[in-house]
Every structure is written in C-alpha cells, then in structure tokens.
Image 1 (cartoon, rainbow, N blue to C red):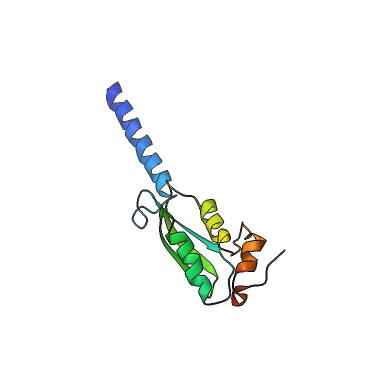
Image 2: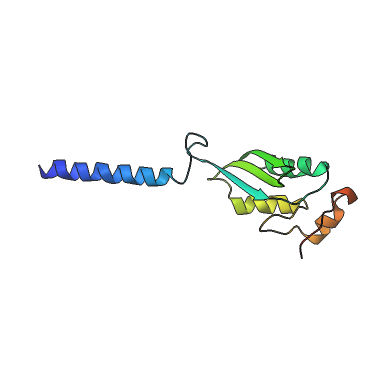
Length: 122
C-alpha cells in the first residue's frame, strides 16, 4: 500500500512539473529545443531586411529570421541549446543595426550605405 501511495505521489509530481515546464515553451509550435524571440531592430532602407536576416540565418542554431518592416521587429526561431536571445541581438548589432538592448558600434553604423542610416537614440 505504501508503494502504491508513493508511486501515485511521484506520478502527480511528474505531471505538475511537466505542466509547469509546458507553460514556458510551446512544444507543438516550437519543438523541445526550439524557441522564438521577437525584438525591435532599427532600420529604414530596403537593404536592411536582407542584411539583418542574413546576419542571423548564417549562424548555426538559427533556423529562421523574419524582419517586419512595419513594426520594425524581427521574429527569430532558434535552437535554445545553441544560442540565446542576447547573442542574437549582438549579431544584429554587429552588422550595424541597433536593437532593444544593444547599440551597433559607431564605425559599423557609419559604414552602412547612406540610405540605411536611421535616427539613433543616444
């Protein structure tokens, strides 16, 4: 009888733990190692979409990147065991585009074509 009660308690604990973890990730949409991140990225010209998305798509662990021109946000799907959202924002900043958390280096921003210069918040 004691063994049955213990087994029942363990089963309930496992169910609660699984449910709590399911709140953090959408396994049906993303899968067990996939996560999605959306954040703001500054840019104004037609070339920036290509530049921003390609900077991410070339990185191992990133499966897709889609920059929305209207909202100036990017949706990135990635393997959360290989890369994290901060590193993703660093990659975007490294090609000259400010993100919510990371400002692009001044020299890289200055090297962008003139049409790609946006108003920076300093």
